[in-house]
Image 1 (spheres, one colour):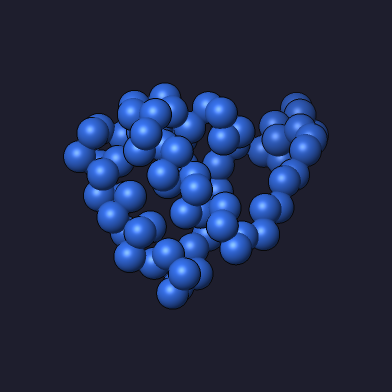
Image 2: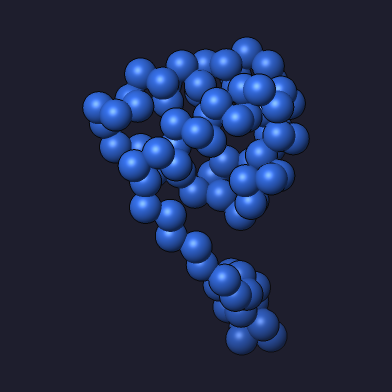
Length: 79
């Protein structure tokens, strides 16, 4: 799940390399609770963040789910 914890600079660069190698040749699935505008705090570099998003959304199908957390609903039912 992207964005659960911020990446160190080297981790962000490595993830970018993986995404770049897969770009237009492989499928990638990314899950996150963050909107694209919030990704900069994950990568810590606006240029790198823009490059990652650009490669991911080109030729992509975005699936956006809105609503309450499934885990939160389950915890309410158990109480």
